[in-house]
Length: 111
Image: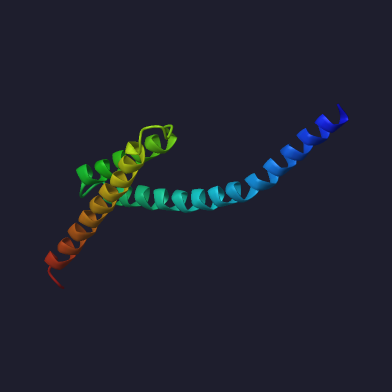
């Protein structure tokens, strides 16, 4: 009985020690992801008046990314591929918004 308790305590201790680096890495990734989400939200809000459809698309893509992240990863790699494609689509929408801003700035007459 005493040996069994010792084995269980040892296993739990090892599992706890091994999981700490993974939790730390997840926290760092989470902070970077939160910063990116804030940037996307800011860009969508800033362009809401000039480009409402692009801003809405950007927000929907971000929401889709969040839902895909919450889904269980048992989809034969399709969930991960959808996540990557969603990120690529967000980048394209952002680039389109930036292009529009540049074109609008170039079209403004100088005073």
